Image (spheres, rainbow, N blue to C red):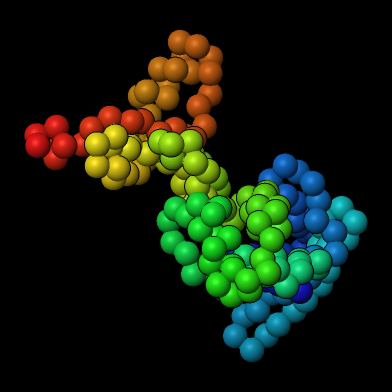
Length: 194
């Protein structure tokens, strides 16, 4: 078993069933759900619809851990590599880091695991200026990128910076942009001036 998600938040009283589902809406049955506050621990398992119920939890911050059954050692290894990664990392980089831990790592297992983790919301993929797929580890917000075609440097574009552009495209064309796949290529101030 591998812990694939840990969430810390404050609960008042949890007496209604809560469900665990992939971002596409598919339920996650058989997941182990553990709630911990200090020395107090309560646990349950999700039902066939991905729902679970914990008895009344006291006020205060609780750590909720969701453990997925069926994660092989190879998949756990991908999760370990991602846990030490920050920002953007390519699939090839993840495969290479996994191969440093286990030379028998199979790339298809890495990419299938990345697909599952994206469904769980733990990674997001985007594309760099070259079209190469990049993964964003534990993204907090969607963002696009600026890429300098001269020096190759890259910067993140947050929602506020492109909100007018995104709104104009949606208003004029009815098209909803996926900001995580937006990369604008140009030249940075240093390269323009140099």
